[in-house]
Length: 143
Image (cartoon, rainbow, N blue to C red; front, top):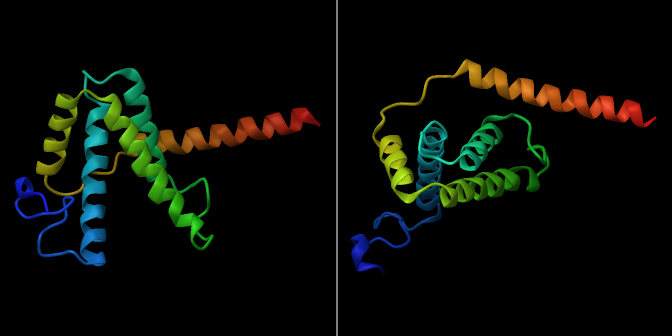
């Protein structure tokens, strides 16, 4: 146990070492990190590559279209459990530590869920439709 963490081990609350408590804590951390990622995408001191990756991670997390569809028994959920945290980790590595700490603090203190951003949703749908159109055009040209 790490004494500096107040009796906690690996960020898990001291009273809840069971699988359910760890999963609940991980989901809470993921939600907070996604909120920090959204704030970082709009922060003026974030490099353009980190902004692009942050937007891509948020779009993938919000998109109903996955690399592996969710109806495939185990793999469908594993891609979400691997791609989103890996993308968040990469964004976290590209953002200056002070900026990430500021965005994390703002994400944890903001109350409630974010309001739906219809412009972002339309952009995600348009990107997917554009990708499908380009793929269809390419396939038709290949004939």
